[in-house]
Image (cartoon, rainbow, N blue to C red; front, top):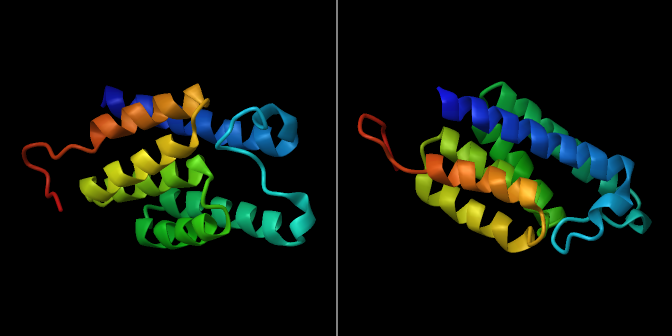
Length: 138
């Protein structure tokens, strides 16, 4: 139960990090892997942001299949966004698909080179992507 509380706090930290990056793009531009999408591409930022919001709402509703669909679309738009990979890993964890969970964490880490908060969230999630006795695992 304590690890669930830690995971929830980590999710909130990552979500607030996303909000800060939207309000102040210069805050995250120092991070090699996580930067706001280019503003010159018209509708792309709005589409990406709405996909992220829809994915988070689906995750909160427990509809991880729908969240995965939204996140996969967001990743097609911005494949180097480590937060989307992290959220995708969370959805796979919720479905007990630990192999995919670990793969998505690996991708998130590859693009989040200097983001220590996201790395902490990835470490917490990685510890949970292990099949425990009594769980159904894929």
